[in-house]
Length: 214
Image (cartoon, rainbow, N blue to C red):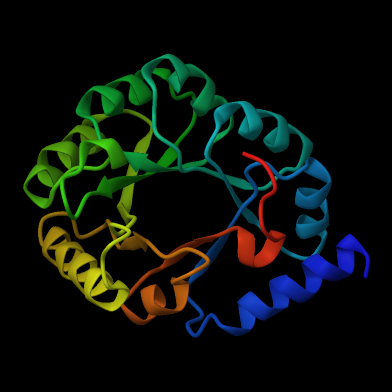
């Protein structure tokens, strides 16, 4: 089987498991070559995700598409991120919101990263801190607040975690009604996430195969 045939089969399998037409599939291409991105673009994929700005810069130039940055944001990388990312999934700092607004040269869609457990090592803010962060994004030039993103703790039961995320999002919408999107769910749990309101899923290994390197 050629790489083209492999990716086509894997992509079709994932698409068949997406049960709602309003779900955006973001194919996460970190560590995979540009050639894979080009194949997937030819197969109709329009949204790609990267965790590292160095990879994102190269691939976004090579393959025009909607590019999503979903890694941890570092202040020194912001000037680079805004050059190629159309969407940012991982904003969890008012300081970074200010810097993104100052550096952005075009509109960028922004998801706020929610933390269910408050673990600082995993990024995100707890529900009580979302409003202040959202206000910072709304006030920043060239940033559009589109919703929330969350990666549940590894120890969480998926259905319970995604139900909790959905509830937080619904409460958030009462003050920020335009932030309709919910980015949650990856290769191992995206079907459960979709059942609990996800509008964006970030899938890598189910389409591209197991990573052999970082």
